[in-house]
Length: 603
Image 1: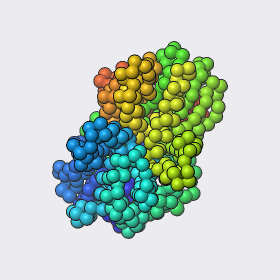
Image 2: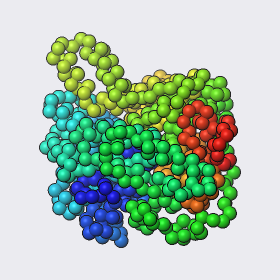
Image 3: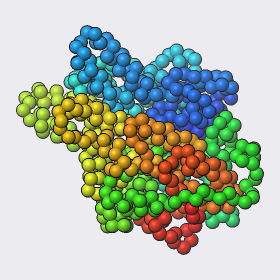
Image 4: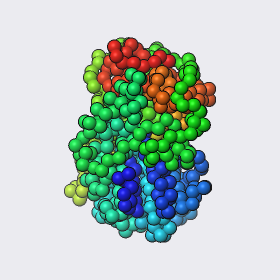
């Protein structure tokens, strides 16, 4: 494997959600340990599942992995990190300042900006902790999906530059109070990231146009930050031999090979490794140890037995996505949020729901809060009654800055305006701007359908955290006034106004992740409306031996979703062609039949 040749101390695994970063990071850790190295595996993903892959509880502390001497793991818990960060900031002033002032500071530190900075604080500590470097020869970072990772890696420069000015007002009181103390550590972190002798970026992708485009964009953005030693791993490529005698497998092979042939030029210059699709879920030590072995095959008992032959088990009788759309359409308007782990097809499913609603004559606004969104490429066309937008963090932040300068800055002298402009360059400003844009869009759901393709789970939960902080602040201010008010959180909690669709794949880790997301939403008072199992091989009735083994593994996961997790369920089959364009999105929803030559089974 090229990406493991003379591996440096720090290895970052990054890429679009669902491409296999966690599996690859875990498998790499096991391989390095097998070579006699001491390894620490760190997840910076707010929705980490490293523990699930290894089959043990890890959490926010260094945990030795049982049965693997030399390997330890750590999951940076953003909420625990934020609480510890708040305690360090508020502790010294508690009992010194008036209680009302202390409560104000605590509320100020309750938003997603503080959560992100606290996680970043722990991240930089790992890059600069000399005692850890003495204990471990390699530190591997399993990162959040691309948009969140780039934001994290931008922070050393962003905060270092902001601290250099020594400015900022109360809007960043908490972050600045903590960050000022860490100036030298942040500089050391920036230097470590930019040094190719210490740091290597592993871009993980699938043989799909969207993920390869995302990898190319990530390559350029990280290179601009100084992280230029990059390698590309294309994961989960279906072996060509599987296409013999199976039209569906043959079609998948053709589209994957076409995507690789059309790979962006900037990626062609990178060292490349390809990993074949395995017939088993990459959960547990036995499976992980075989991920980097191209010739391996799991024992039959590991995935249910057999060699791929035998009768196919029936798929549970569940409705198509179109049946859920029919039920949604009866309300005439409302917010539909598609949530889930990265890589489960949220963008495609959101687009399919939106075009199916528009085809029924409903007015629909399709939007995304995903920093790495590909809505327009997925839609690839227009449709009556459908409008499309994106909450672009850079655009909405600049718009917010200009609004503040035009209002608060209007009466300031030159020095005061300069101070205000400096404060608005704080990374905290983006949190406020994105939340305001999110709030404006969901208000439209009172008169039309708003279908939102959300960011991967962790990033979405941070946005909901900001929504909750705003709700608590409004309740505190308005609760005793007798004035009627509705906050965005109240709208999300109202099942008559908001329907949350949880998207997943029929695989162990995505289902566990979706169940965890459902629990998080319920703690926030939001009850998911339905689950959608996407890209089901079992529903497609494949005949390829590898795909049939994967199909049998899927059945137990579909049954678990149907019986233990979902109030409503739809299963979407794997399609022979990428679901790009209005026609194929309607086929995915089950609204129209596949055109000639496009094969998939019925559910």
